[in-house]
Length: 68
Image 1 (cartoon, rainbow, N blue to C red):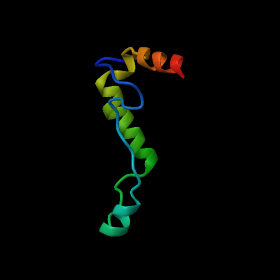
Image 2 (cartoon, one colour):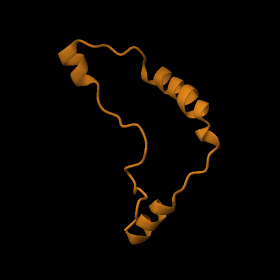
Image 3 (cartoon, one colour):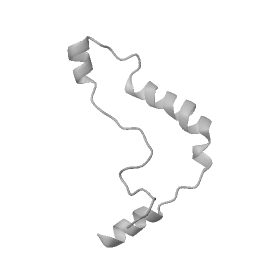
């Protein structure tokens, strides 16, 4: 039992999915390509929030890996 701590892979993070269905069924086109989107997200979300300077707690991951 890990209590209130969340075990991987359910961390607070973005989830990714294919855009193929939106392209096919909605005639949608992405505004950004992968590289420019990742650069924008890194600079304007990750770095801007200061998360690059914060400590990451892997203790729950370590507990799970010990049990495997």
